[in-house]
Length: 349
Image 1 (cartoon, rainbow, N blue to C red):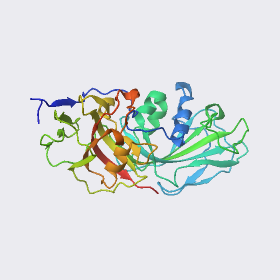
Image 2 (tube, helix red, strand yellow):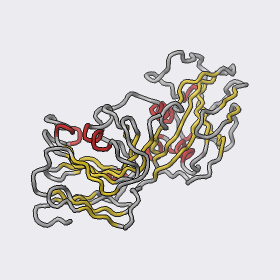
Image 3 (cartoon, one colour):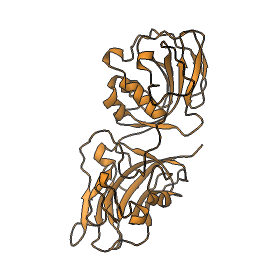
Image 4 (spheres, one colour):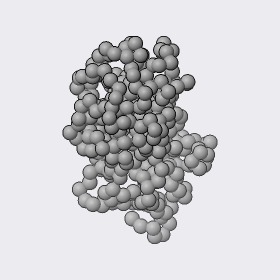
């Protein structure tokens, strides 16, 4: 592979950028969920109300295995005057850093001053939530510190007084306790971490795919963005899925969450219009459903297994069609090329 002749080569720069928020793959945004509640909660925290190393609030008794729904015994009223945190169970896995994407389960309770409590949200009946620690760092660095430095397998509790309640207008749940002294309790289980610059396993430091003049050539090294050379020929009329590396992990199906490192460019002029590598190489998760990804991803990645490196060519009818996508500078009737490392597949529960 090279840039000679009519080939057009691109490769993402190495400098990390801001926290990643995908722009090109999503067909539309899913409704506000629990992760939004968490982010709203963090925006209300400042250095003056960051978690104190000397916890003064009386947390309820919390038991049960990490990864399973916790058992919580509320015997006293909430008395937190600031945002506080408490490690319930110490993990023994890899240490979370500020550059990670973290898989987490969480339960949210409204906790009244009279000891009453109501479960407002739980993720334990669905797939784990994925949280970018770097995104939390931008919103509230003190709170991100509660994640960074703990080990996978940790159960962490955080209490928010009413002044910092995550149940803000627009995200309140039906039946919310209207008592102005109601606190909010988060219980978060850190289940896994995906570090920045993660790529799938490969036997050699560098792998090369030869597209034989019909498909793009790809050169990929561990921990670095792929270099993609697109031939100066007409793109395929039909979608193509090419496995450069075949993994042996969980199989992606409709509704699965996939954790990815990816690069996206247009066939016509090899313009990169989206890439995790452009934003610090923090992995990004997507749900394989029409509300989250384009048809080319839905059809091209279903059946792929975790640990795979896949190249997709996506014609307009499976991508952004005759309208294109002005938000990411993709014009009408563009054929798209994606090189995707599937770091993990989280099955639908």
